[in-house]
Length: 205
Image (cartoon, helix red, strand yellow):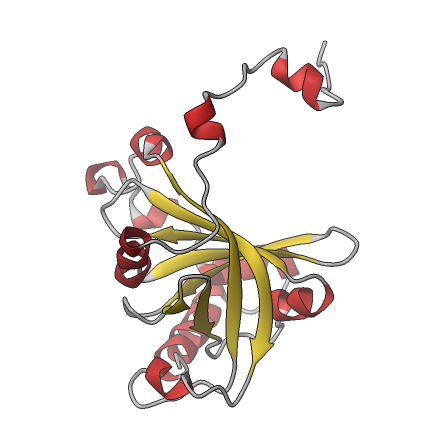
């Protein structure tokens, strides 16, 4: 029979405490090597939550170096064109705590950043965030509270960067097929896919 764990004491009866080195490995600033990792990363995941605890995670991608390290405690990234739902941004207005997970293609190690975020516009550094001549109108500044590296076990287990393990494209539903299934629309999946490809091509920045 399934047993539901109710508190940390019950959890620790199953999983022992980490070593002190691991438990205390986070720092509260951006050290030089972590800055190099952030500047090499073209992709990160941004986690946020509403005031009532509802959570959201979204992918963020830009050319390497687009996330600016403003000082050893602050980084900033542009908000690019998207679907205009603004889930993360509205969450930040309610509850500023965010989590970030930086990835570098082919590298198993990742960098985790937790901190408080704020939305800004008309910031003097926005022109430095321009891509293909387009300057963003909004940016997110994150004040770092915790920063630490995460080992590569998840990437080794999943073989994420091993192209030999990747599925054939036909085995995975397309965005159009997913939308058709989720929304119950009768629009052919191929038409949805074509519209999404066109939007992605012409409205990246």
